Length: 255
Ligand code: GCO
Image 1 (cartoon, helix red, strand yellow):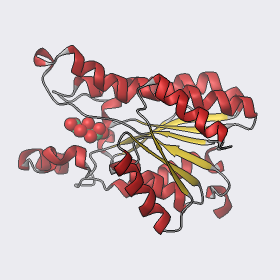
Image 2 (image 1 turned 180 degrees about the vertical axis):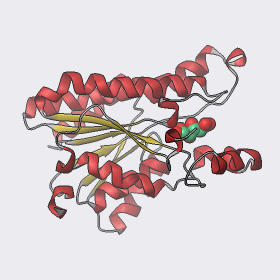
Image 3 (image 1 turned 90 degrees about the horizontal axis):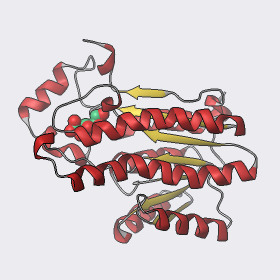
């Protein structure tokens, strides 16, 4: 059974993995045996994350590109091709948050969130799937969804719309790519202790709300998401497709 979760010999690209949830996910995939590729937009952050993982003995490289930039993504994958890097596991994790009531929201801010949190998953997923299909031995795509893929919270409309889109993009990927032995699924984190949520964590009222409206009575930790991603990246989930697994302490299951 242990072999079912072994990712040895596989290469995983995790977008937005220089910090936060993305870094926890890529560390988990590396610990399960995968060679990993750290992605981010800032060279120094990517290099620091690569060094941290290499110091732990993991096979790691970095790839600095903006996942929302179609040209940059194509160039990054062309470089992978040149280097003989075959990405068998893609985690579309990159995401930003922008909190403001819709009536005050500018279109540019709406668009920026949708570009990074939803369109980027399509752009990077398309490049990865083209190669998985061409190679002929399948692959794994894991999109990072959110509680807001199911339920809305005021002041985060672009994020919510994008994460709702991630839920249905995941199903579209399953619908089109399942025939090529590609499994596309999603992980939906609950409220997790990350830098993106610092303003919420430090807000006593919000902190109390997170703890009172969640059966586990606490925030989740980034490393608590890694096991589900390793599962969806492994042979253990070879007949799981188009699903969203919520890692939320039970939040969505209760009134
Ligand atoms: C917010 C938070 C949420 C969480 C997470 C919940 O402002 O409500 O940022 O969006 O980060 O996505 O699943």
